[in-house]
Length: 232
Length: 232
Image (spheres, rainbow over the protein chains, first blue to last red):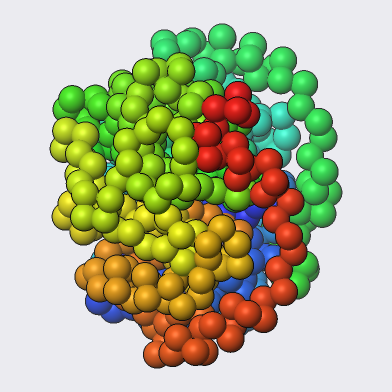
């Protein structure tokens, strides 16, 4: 498998490229609309063709490249089947498997940051893509888009911390230049969700973050509901 | 081996943490002075102790954390034996092996960006840390600190492109959110040094970059010659 982690310095978003080295078919997870040229250059130079553009959720801080990628490559678009995304796409349910040749991604519904957020677990459980459900030593906010601290706590504990301690976790963002973590690390060191913290302690932390209103949310969420089509 | 790639959003510098999972001893490559707390938090939370702070060269765009790390952890400091770094440190010659338990780094002198730049190749040649000698689809500039386009061209072709095509190359910087490349890719797709370009073509490209004077160079280079000690 070919694997690349790509970063958007503006929104601090991570995009992931997974390719089957023998068939050349590839998946992009959480692509960013402004960086389509960079990502497609990588796809081409690695000898890949894009089969699927896949998002972990309807983002509030950047617009997905899904529709632009579909237009330019003919790829399919896949989203968690939450009703959040309204455009034409493959709707993934909890327990589904998204398979592109040797790349097998197990869909785990992990609501809490948004009502429809999903985590994608590679078939051998060596890595998982957590979107904003679990970040490195943090997590996505829970105060809009159907977010809920209690729900996020359950998602992380039941669907992510239940993976092997060695599973590499690749988040949707990082704001401090960190690139990857593991289940074992977050169980111990996550200052919100790890170290034996209870759901009540977590809810209190989340209720007191005093975060600013996301500056792109009023543009990004409507655009992402249409799979980025309106932002082209 | 524990391996982590860390990013400085200000200078777009990559720092690398390599740890022997069984003995817990670790090496940091190209640590950034402003990010010592982040890096030492990772070292501690991964159950590691820092054995060596290692730089690929005397940087012009950020100050090394070497002296601060030594002060806070008692680690050794290692530099290429170029005479560029003047402080007390282990001086690494071409052909030397820096070994920290299971982590074995082969030193290859790769001048051209600076006169003393080195590339560190992991013992099994699965990965190499190229500093600014070779960047993803680019390379370090060659117009100061003893830089030379002809010398850099020879370093890349003789010391880096001679590695297996599958060797993962981890650069000292990336400005477009890319994290890793391979020897095979750069041989074909590097727009300055790959694709059969001659040394004359490369020298012409480098002579016409029209780059701005590096804004931190007058602070960073003197500080880095002292291993970051004067910037503490």
